[in-house]
Amino acid sequence: MAIALCPGSFDPVTLGHLDIIERSARHFDEVIIAVIRNPQKTQSLFSLEERQEMLKEALPHVGNVRIEFFKGLLVEFAKEHGADAIVKGLRAVSDFDYELQMAQMNQKLAGIDTFFLSTSPQYSFLSSSLVREVARFGGDVSGMVPKHVHDRLIERFRAEGA
Ligand code: PNS
Image (cartoon, rainbow, N blue to C red):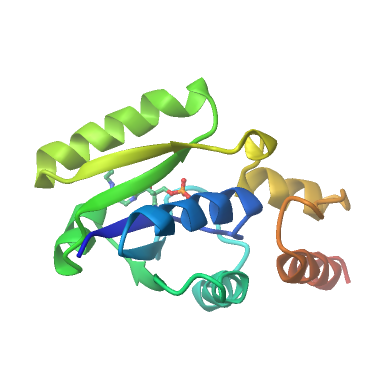
């Protein structure tokens, strides 16, 4: 049974993430979406539970996917869950340097391989951080995230602005 991890912060999940997750699920017996608990980047917009709910709601049609949280090293989580591989999406050459470095570090630490999927071209500009920024200032992010995520973004920023 081949198990793959799709790790990330998913704050919030975008159509680009879903594209990679759905395509990974066609190649592996099981895909674990590994949502990081302690992202080093910015403060999170959505709580872990909200991010989990949005992911769950977006993926009812994919039977071999489950969502888990992790903190610390991804390779430790991979070992605990018997994962054979990590899958990452590559949007552009600019992603490559850092992703290659992480893939090689994870390979060195635990012998785990990383598989790269090329992002579908219509999503190559997409990132959660840009979606948050555009939505925060009232820009239209429909077509970049599922409808229920769009609704939550609008609700969140309306509440913040109130
Ligand atoms: O969605 P993101 O924020 O780009 O995801 C980044 C993530 C969570 C995949 C990456 O930061 C990660 O794997 N963090 C876990 C900590 C870890 O294992 N660090 C060493 C990587 S070589």
